[in-house]
Image (tube, rainbow, N blue to C red; front, side):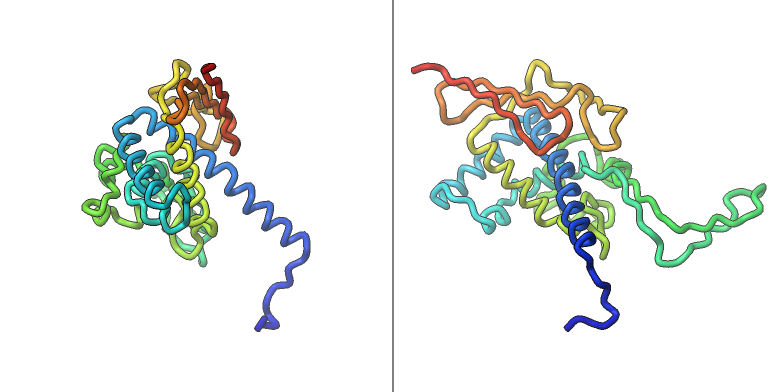
Length: 249
């Protein structure tokens, strides 16, 4: 039953919300996908272990993928969780305080108190704080293993924010990321290209995470005789460009 105090949604309001959902999920999943593939290319031992898990579930399900399988893949979850820690799509959060908070005078020379109305949470800094995550710049999915993940304070890991105002599409975005990884790695081996930019240098002109010079990787088919592919993801668009060239038989 709708309360008489419930807001009235116009067509413009509904369209605006739908567009927001699309835009918010467009860039963030694309960024997460790009950097996860980069890390897997740089860490072939992690990629090999993940591919073994993917092939195990692919054989178990007769080549069909379902939501239950994605949710049950422990190492896939570890890899995506660590990639989102190291490369959070959102660098910081802005939260509006439910009431003004008086921080007092910032220094003896000021006259007015500092009143906080909006709080900024630096996700990037928290995720890379060595006091919270030892050796924070290392890509280490074992942080999120069953034996280790209880050591992580849930308030320090927030790729989709936390609390009642967290990302409304977090579960869908995470599932989308896992499905993309599943399908790409099932059929392709990802490796570093001669144009890959490692160590990573971030592009200074963008507020979103982006590698300076773009994302370049090689894709080698696991099923064909010979395959040459480069993946370039310059503007974080949700399009993965595959250039396939098969050897003639």
